[in-house]
Image 1 (cartoon, helix red, strand yellow):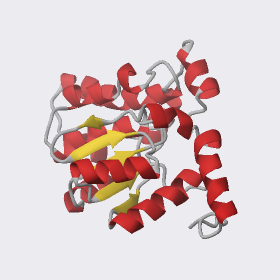
Image 2 (cartoon, helix red, strand yellow):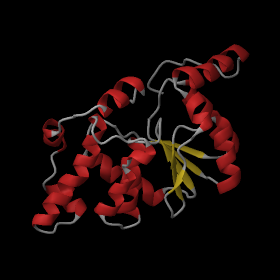
Image 3 (cartoon, one colour):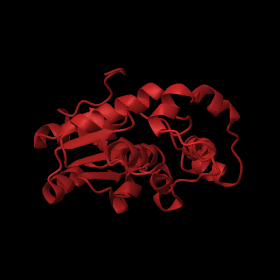
Image 4 (cartoon, rainbow, N blue to C red):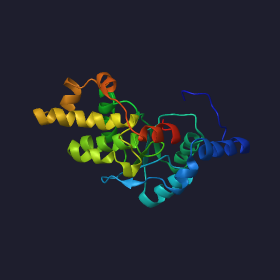
Length: 224
């Protein structure tokens, strides 16, 4: 792990601290009531950070074989407890990090495409709230793995999942919409555009946030 060990799950105190951290610090008490779980078809599901009991539920109900943690390795109790639950159930836990406040790098897009081609399904992918990073990953899954068009895949970034386009996370919408605008001028395949014309740093600079939803997403919900 790229961070110091925080929770010793073999100790009753360490386990209790991990649970408290998951529910209070990492807002797990909200996800216990609503996990933002949706079927993407093709054996892949999206959701927010699952608790160990939710991991067991999804494994029992859907036969989950793999989980993609889009938060990457992190110091929250949620990560330690998820890792333990996956180990006990024989689920492959894969960390692959996307970001909610910057457009994806070409290497991240290609890496994710490769991951989807080797992933053992049925599988789940999640971030913290199941809104922004799960949204862009779901859209890329539809484009790169299911072969759907970008315009329809963009529906994975939507308010019903808790995604606010008029916030810093709106840069993810801007990424796809920039491709659609370019493609409208003269057709170009999505990955060809990514490889030959797309500049993620320049796109990040050009994007400007606006609106009340920035306050909601960035201050109240404390999105990562």
